[in-house]
Image 1 (cartoon, rainbow, N blue to C red):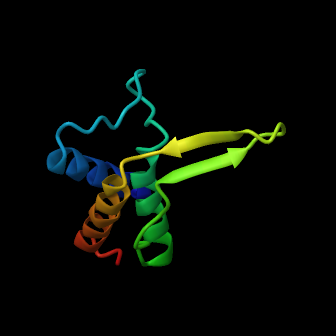
Image 2: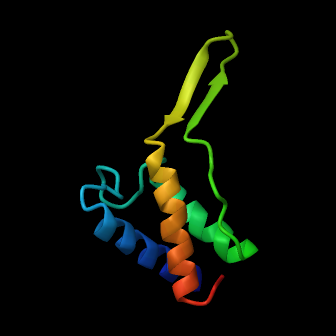
Length: 96
């Protein structure tokens, strides 16, 4: 339950820093897959006491026919800023 508090604080900070950021899918309840990265940064930071410097911004796989399928391709600045937001949030609450 406490972890969800940190995620909420981090999401609020993300919105404050990037007001045009849409942190919810069209249904208003679920984050789009690329926005879930912020939650992952917070979760991993809280569990390991450190925030990763960077994560890949582009994921692809090959399907059974050998065709490349792009799973996620996000703004490369977003993961970087999300890592900093997660770190700032966790430091502010003594988790790092």
